[in-house]
Length: 130
Image (cartoon, rainbow, N blue to C red; front, side):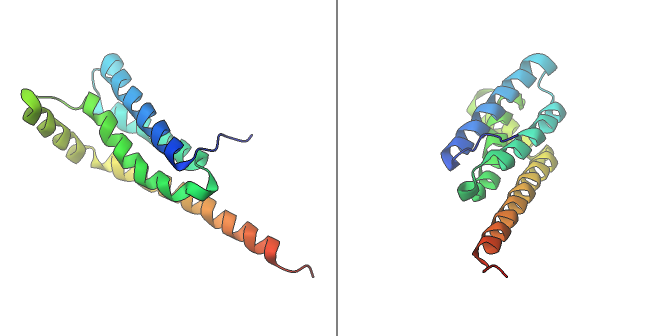
Protein backbone atom coordinates (compact mmCIF):
# COMPACT_ATOMS: atom_id res chain seq x y z
CA UNK A 1 0.00 0.00 0.00
CA UNK A 2 1.62 3.27 -1.04
CA UNK A 3 1.98 5.90 1.62
CA UNK A 4 2.08 9.65 1.31
CA UNK A 5 5.25 11.21 -0.06
CA UNK A 6 6.15 14.33 1.87
CA UNK A 7 8.54 16.98 0.61
CA UNK A 8 11.17 18.36 2.95
CA UNK A 9 8.83 21.17 4.00
CA UNK A 10 5.94 18.74 4.29
CA UNK A 11 8.04 16.61 6.60
CA UNK A 12 8.71 19.63 8.81
CA UNK A 13 5.02 20.57 8.93
CA UNK A 14 3.95 16.96 9.58
CA UNK A 15 6.40 16.40 12.43
CA UNK A 16 5.83 19.74 14.11
CA UNK A 17 2.05 19.50 13.88
CA UNK A 18 1.81 15.90 15.08
CA UNK A 19 4.30 16.25 17.93
CA UNK A 20 2.71 19.52 19.04
CA UNK A 21 -0.73 17.90 19.03
CA UNK A 22 0.56 14.79 20.82
CA UNK A 23 2.19 16.96 23.46
CA UNK A 24 -1.05 18.76 24.20
CA UNK A 25 -3.07 15.52 24.12
CA UNK A 26 -0.60 13.92 26.50
CA UNK A 27 -0.96 16.89 28.82
CA UNK A 28 -4.75 16.74 28.77
CA UNK A 29 -5.26 12.95 28.83
CA UNK A 30 -2.29 11.61 30.77
CA UNK A 31 -1.30 14.54 32.99
CA UNK A 32 1.88 15.40 31.04
CA UNK A 33 3.52 11.99 31.24
CA UNK A 34 6.98 12.21 29.73
CA UNK A 35 7.11 8.45 29.18
CA UNK A 36 3.86 8.44 27.20
CA UNK A 37 5.16 11.34 25.15
CA UNK A 38 8.41 9.48 24.42
CA UNK A 39 6.55 6.33 23.39
CA UNK A 40 4.28 8.33 21.08
CA UNK A 41 7.35 9.95 19.53
CA UNK A 42 8.67 6.67 18.12
CA UNK A 43 5.83 5.94 15.64
CA UNK A 44 5.99 9.54 14.44
CA UNK A 45 9.70 9.05 13.76
CA UNK A 46 9.08 5.83 11.83
CA UNK A 47 6.29 7.41 9.77
CA UNK A 48 8.42 10.44 9.03
CA UNK A 49 11.21 8.24 7.73
CA UNK A 50 8.80 6.18 5.64
CA UNK A 51 6.72 9.02 4.21
CA UNK A 52 9.42 11.47 3.16
CA UNK A 53 9.97 11.35 -0.57
CA UNK A 54 13.24 9.84 -1.82
CA UNK A 55 14.82 13.14 -2.82
CA UNK A 56 14.33 14.63 0.65
CA UNK A 57 15.22 11.69 2.89
CA UNK A 58 18.06 13.52 4.59
CA UNK A 59 15.69 16.10 6.10
CA UNK A 60 13.82 13.56 8.23
CA UNK A 61 16.54 12.87 10.86
CA UNK A 62 17.07 16.60 11.19
CA UNK A 63 13.47 17.57 11.81
CA UNK A 64 12.43 14.90 14.35
CA UNK A 65 14.53 16.26 17.26
CA UNK A 66 13.15 19.74 16.61
CA UNK A 67 9.60 18.38 16.62
CA UNK A 68 10.33 16.47 19.84
CA UNK A 69 11.44 19.69 21.54
CA UNK A 70 8.40 21.59 20.27
CA UNK A 71 5.93 19.04 21.61
CA UNK A 72 7.89 18.79 24.83
CA UNK A 73 7.03 22.42 25.61
CA UNK A 74 3.47 21.29 26.32
CA UNK A 75 4.53 18.37 28.50
CA UNK A 76 7.46 19.83 30.46
CA UNK A 77 6.88 21.23 33.92
CA UNK A 78 6.86 25.00 33.95
CA UNK A 79 7.98 27.28 36.73
CA UNK A 80 7.33 30.97 37.20
CA UNK A 81 7.95 33.14 34.14
CA UNK A 82 10.00 32.53 31.04
CA UNK A 83 13.09 31.35 32.91
CA UNK A 84 11.06 28.74 34.81
CA UNK A 85 9.54 27.50 31.57
CA UNK A 86 12.97 27.30 29.97
CA UNK A 87 14.38 25.45 32.97
CA UNK A 88 11.52 22.95 32.79
CA UNK A 89 12.11 22.41 29.08
CA UNK A 90 15.87 21.90 29.50
CA UNK A 91 15.27 19.49 32.38
CA UNK A 92 12.74 17.51 30.33
CA UNK A 93 15.14 17.38 27.37
CA UNK A 94 17.89 16.10 29.65
CA UNK A 95 15.77 13.45 31.33
CA UNK A 96 14.08 12.28 28.14
CA UNK A 97 17.19 12.28 25.94
CA UNK A 98 16.93 8.50 25.55
CA UNK A 99 13.61 8.80 23.71
CA UNK A 100 15.01 11.61 21.61
CA UNK A 101 18.09 9.61 20.60
CA UNK A 102 16.10 6.44 19.99
CA UNK A 103 13.58 8.22 17.77
CA UNK A 104 16.26 10.04 15.82
CA UNK A 105 18.20 6.80 15.36
CA UNK A 106 15.04 5.02 14.21
CA UNK A 107 14.37 7.73 11.64
CA UNK A 108 17.97 7.68 10.44
CA UNK A 109 17.94 3.88 10.03
CA UNK A 110 14.69 3.95 8.07
CA UNK A 111 16.00 6.74 5.87
CA UNK A 112 19.35 5.02 5.28
CA UNK A 113 17.65 1.77 4.35
CA UNK A 114 15.39 3.58 1.90
CA UNK A 115 18.34 5.47 0.43
CA UNK A 116 20.38 2.27 0.00
CA UNK A 117 17.45 0.58 -1.73
CA UNK A 118 17.07 3.58 -4.06
CA UNK A 119 20.78 3.49 -4.96
CA UNK A 120 20.62 -0.27 -5.64
CA UNK A 121 17.60 0.19 -7.91
CA UNK A 122 19.28 2.96 -9.87
CA UNK A 123 22.44 0.90 -10.27
CA UNK A 124 20.43 -2.11 -11.46
CA UNK A 125 18.62 0.01 -14.06
CA UNK A 126 21.84 1.47 -15.40
CA UNK A 127 23.55 -1.90 -15.90
CA UNK A 128 23.52 -3.18 -19.46
CA UNK A 129 21.44 -6.32 -20.00
CA UNK A 130 23.39 -9.59 -20.17
